Length: 186
Image 1 (cartoon, rainbow, N blue to C red):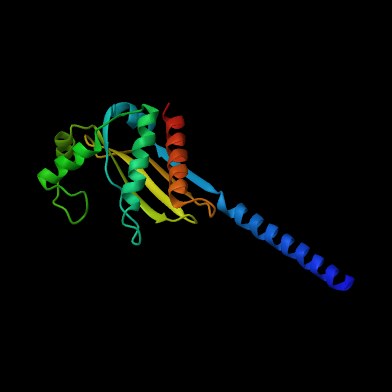
Image 2 (image 1 turned 90 degrees about the horizontal axis):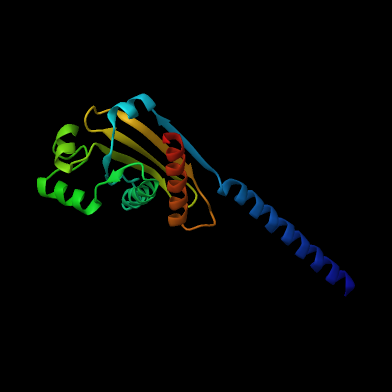
């Protein structure tokens, strides 16, 4: 009978060690975020962008709401920085709808200067989401001057966390990206 208790105790310890090892391996990969920010300080100073519109980001193929979710988070965190005045999203979408303007390859062509005049903005934030899951979330956003058509800054963020909902992963990725951008622009 004591032999059965010993083998049961060994099994419990082995299971505990195995479970700790699995958690350690997953947590080591799960909390990794990588940010890449590029900007042109001279061009940014020259352009004097004050008012911008954040347009809905492109979606990954399997998640048709990811682009909208990330662009709204990006708008929220960008607004908190005070770097720019933001055009109200509903107003921007209403104007685009009324004029039949779609910001996509399939939509009617409009040049950036005309779009800036219609929306009364100096710049547009455009972006795309390439992955959107807890394990693998990635997006890129860029500020484009409507006057020159130049990309003034670009920020990319990748990351993931197996233990959090995808909305929390997205929120953290956007917060980190906008925080890095703010630090570089000030």
